Image (cartoon, rainbow, N blue to C red):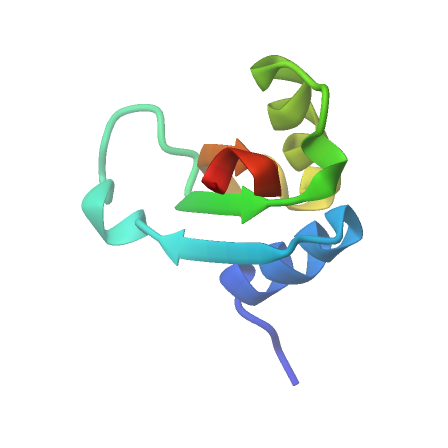
Amino acid sequence: MNLSTQQKLEQALQRLAPIHLQVIDDSHLHAGHAGNTGGGHFSVFIVSDAFAGLSLIKRHRLVYDAAAELLPSAIHALSIQAKTPDELK
């Protein structure tokens, strides 16, 4: 079974033990723009205890590290919202 890039990204982000994970493929909004290497554009909303006590930059780094094997060939851009469970209350 061939997984889509979106499914591969969802699987890769499981290592952050998300309580909530939403991955949206926004590629159709960016087709043909300058600088696109052919990879997709994705929006990620992830809630995990792994982000507790971390700055925004460090949270994003965790997401990028988890998705590293998909960057930059399969994924051109990620829009990331990374929250802790307490930040949703």
